[in-house]
Image: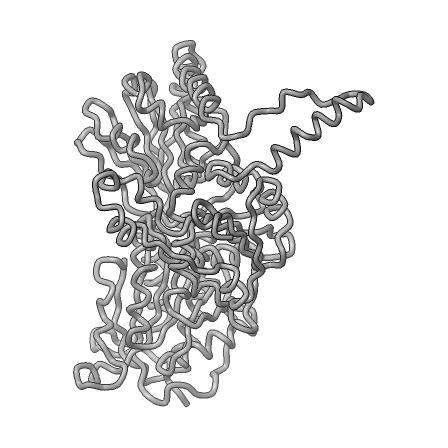
Length: 574
């Protein structure tokens, strides 16, 4: 008999009954009961198990799964530094409101502070970044026996599962990560108890929240930041208001979309804005925060999964849900409201024509008949366009165009997400990005988690990841998928400019010593992406023209593929 095994099986089955479907784990001795229980429940179809070698990759893989599903995902580790390696993903989950459930195995409390091997201070290790933290005493009685938490005996696994999932899903606050630190005594594993399959249902529905009815009146725009969701587009459409939707908002579609919002918010139109309704977490421009901080502008902030924005003045209202009032819907059909929206739409279209990254259309019309000379001239013009080099805007636009609703697109925190945000048109596709902290950490692993969760059958599409070279190298360990693990369809499109050229836009770049700036800011690199792709078992393609790029995007070589697009010095080195 092993209380550790009994407890682990009971906890995981109760988590499954509360809606948790995925467990991501890394190997370790102290966590063996959890790991073996997860493997058994995976074999029985109760849970979906993913195994990774290092904890940081595991945590970001779990983060990606939770982003895609919206459900809690467990990440299991052994004790010691294994737990500390989860911190970056836990921080991102905290700021973006992603429901992670950390299950860390630990020594019993009496061994802490005694120099016991692989023992550290795990309770509270994540500080303010978790919604709930429980240090669970070692199971010493069968899991089904009565529990007296007041006396400090082992908490009931069913109660623990309920507390963890409720906190992760934000039943009494914002959703986000939770931490159950589980103490285990030897024997650390044993024979499995009889396992009863729980009723696998979705998490208990939250209480309905009354919507705030937005009234007509002020000249209004709707801003959709990261994670806003389609509700932002629905409100803008119902109220007849211009929609500013960042590329990772989930709301970048519809007739009210204003793609060229950066230029317009710097111009005359912005001066007439009287009210802003904000969904999600805007992070991709300076113009939106400047507007939100302007005196005299009413700000209505709609609850999102992560942190709520706090504009630089008090003229704001926080609400959990919004809807356009019947009066606002009726007013949207009035001439003044239609003119307000029309000015934004027309100005945006005009600006996009000025900023269009596409090559000029051939001056030659497509021949309609057998004019051999005109056909040759037209063929030459088309060939020239296909052989044209790839700019960053063209790269972003090409990846966007190749992605469809059954696919997923993950954007790294590099220059490319901003390039995409400036130019890509409206399209109702699912886009993910780690914008809670806007960092490059764990991008590859997050994307693989998204792919694992979204590709549930052969028709699940492909997950494309648009990222820079440093973003790839920072999470190169995420490329490692062990033998026997599921390999989803993932395509990494890497813009390789040999370092962090995003920092070239900083003011200090013009005044700092060029060599020092390059060394400490751009951090130049000349890694062979082709060679480490081969080492990790990914196919590799290098493209330098638009025709090659389009071919690579539409015909990936194998389920795991890397497409390298060299820029600058890296292009000349081949």
